[in-house]
Amino acid sequence: MAAQGVRDAKADFLNTVASLPPLQSALLCELAADAALGSDVRRPDLFSAAMKTRLLARLDTEMGAAHGVSVESPAVQNALDKLREENFLWHSQRGSYSVEDEQFLAWLIEEDRSQ
Image (cartoon, rainbow, N blue to C red; front, side, top):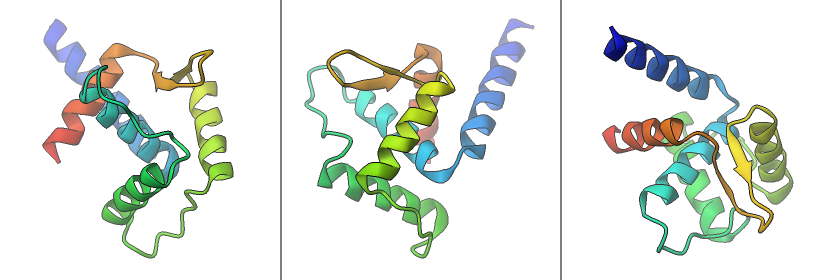
């Protein structure tokens, strides 16, 4: 019974992520991918050219090259703010962001690896 409850919770969470606006979903997945690398790996800034490239690649894969989603800093900041408001992300005083819930993080990592 408990295992089914976990599977249902995971499915609900992943469906919720899939229903987010594309940039918010892409940001969550990229933050999870970074977290999967471990704490000793330096991560690119969320507003860096490297992160914009990663976000565009993810959006292109998921939506096609003509998606029209902006990955410029104002759009990224707005998406991060919305994710914080919805309690998907935590923002430290040092300015870094991380997925709020460790279980959600694990599910995002698992889902990203399976694709």
